[in-house]
Every structure is written in C-alpha cells, then in structure tokens.
Image (cartoon, rainbow over all chains, first blue to last red; front, side, top):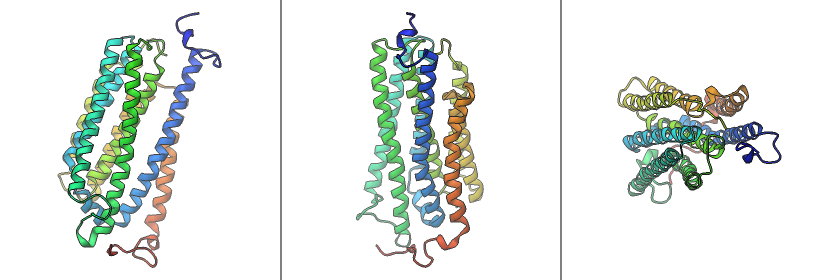
Length: 215
Length: 110
C-alpha cells in the first residue's frame, strides 16, 4: 500500500475522490454559512433603510480605528493561514506549526480588541436593555442598531472561537506529524473556514463602522 | 492532496498587501465626505473586491475546477436573491415602513 493510499477510507474509490468529497462538502457548508449570516445582513439593510438617521448616529459611536485595526489583524491571520496550507502542501512541518500558531495568536488578538470594544459599549450605556442611554428622539432605533451590532459581531466572534479551537487541534496533530504533502485535508478545510470568517468581517466592517459616517 | 502547492508564496504576499492597502483606502475614504451615496458605494465595492481576492487566491477558487466555482457561487447567488428580493419590496413599498399605520414609530417612548 502506498503512502497516499494509507489515508483512504474504504468507501472511496481513491484518494482523489476522497479529497474532492471533503473539499466540496466544505464548500456546501460554507454556502449554508453565507445564508446564515446573509439573513442578518438582509435584516440589517431593511432596518437601516427604515431608520437611516438613527443608524448613522449610532454607528458613529463605534470606534472606527479599532474596527480598521481588527480588519488588518484578520487579514494578517488569513495570510498566515494561507502560508500554513502552503507549508503543508510543500511538506514542511516546522513552518506549518509556526504559521498555525501565528494564526491562532492573531485570532486571539482580534478577540481581545473585540472584548475591549464590548467593554467600552457597556461603560457608555450602549448595550441594548434597561440601561441603554441615547439621544431621546433616536433612542429606540439606535437600540436596534446596537442589537444588530452585538448579534452580528457576536456571532462572528463565536465563529472565531470555533476556528481557534480547530486551529489548536491542528497544531497538536501537526506536532504528531499527521500532515504531509500527501495528506493535509484538515489543514486545507480549516483554512477555507478561517478565510470565510475573515470575509464575513470584511463586510461587517464597512456595514457597521463606515456606512454611518456620511449619510 | 496536491503534491505541489497550488499558489506561490509570491502571489499570497501580493494579495496580502493589496488587502491591507484596500483596508487603509476604505478607512481613509470614511474621513472624506464625497456625498453619502459615493462614500457608501466605495465602502461596499472595496469590501466586494477584498472578498473576491480572498476567495480567488487564499481559498484557491481561481485554481479549482468548475464544480467548485458552482458551489462557491451558489451561496452568493442565493444571498443576492435573499437581499435583492427583500430590498425591492422594502424600497418600493413605503407602506411597509414603520411610522405608517400599524408600524411602530421612531420616537416610541421606552
């Protein structure tokens, strides 16, 4: 049995078919994720259209710089993830582990900055609920804006946490030498997931932080 | 499964810097008032460009077979139906807006 064949599950004809099934399966999952986030995006557009003034005013309470820095952090993490997949493809274990670690650390930096932003919102009474304070005439719809803000960035953060869990598992497996140029499907698919989460943020950043600045 | 890498490191680096530059540009544009419509159009189109770069290069779609293209495009096609179909209703029927008839008003007391 060749080295490649050792990774084939019995219900697949060959390793190419096995890989294609995993790869396409991941894309189907990502399509469902697009729809999942898409529902929230669609609702956001509807309410933004209805309460344009309040959404603009509320959006200006977000810290544009922290949003931009977090966008850059996530792009860096996508870059290191791409390099991790590249390292696996070229059969280099040490760089693979290093890039997976870097991606994890950048993911944690993103979550740290996000946590600080959430903390500031609590301090500024901008968290929807009984302690929400906002300019009287716009208070209700501004509260809706912040509900979207926390729901969308919160759901994105949950995806980041899951991604960091996956990366941690990959690091342990990579240390045990599970991946090679012949077999690294888990690294490749986790990469797809990580890039997808990056794309969600690429849209959340303009929607929540930028659109409100000039109406 | 590929014995040789699909994308060279050089391309990854190029895409990476393009993404960072686009992030800087979209942030800078937020500080200049070009008229709301143009500002928003710029922010959204830059986001679409960035997403396309990530999908095509980081996610290898550019180098993948047609079936992957179909799978990747399907999600976004249905997203377009979801958002387009919703918005064409919301934008063209003012009676849906809050503030008319039974809908809640903006200045609803808490």
